[in-house]
Image (cartoon, rainbow, N blue to C red):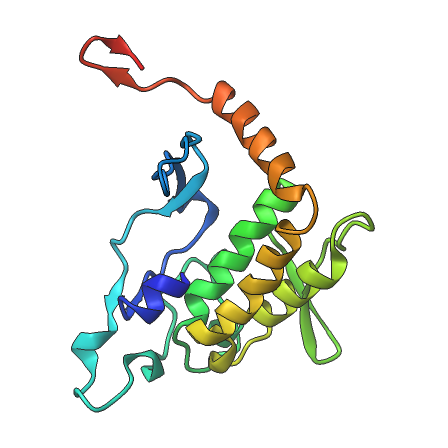
Length: 192
């Protein structure tokens, strides 16, 4: 999402769990690739090329829309509150997709005081600070929180956490196990 917005200046407008697929990783530096370790966002049928909507001197990421063009379950807070929306439509979808990966169910949210929160609480053994900041920022953002620079600020602590100690090796081991569970790809000579 960060790259799509920052470099492509494109809103996907339909980020949801169903629109992510596992793909084979591209080996970096000659390392052995683990199949099914990268996620790719698909189905750009509702996407908007923001560059086509502004003059050269304006930032396409500042474009805002009114109205509802999103499935109600995946509508960001701005749409639910009938305010202008932009990149937050995609970052809310990223948040909802992450919720499915963590909980195995779609995200329901509720308003508590002045903040929207997922109805399901974070489990005590999860990295509550990381996930709490992630959900709070992406659910309750104004359009500034959806800016790619701010998405990067959310991503970097996760990367730092994963790079501590033996976590990276543990994740690679789990991904190799997952690779064995995935169907094998057909080739001209049979299965690869």
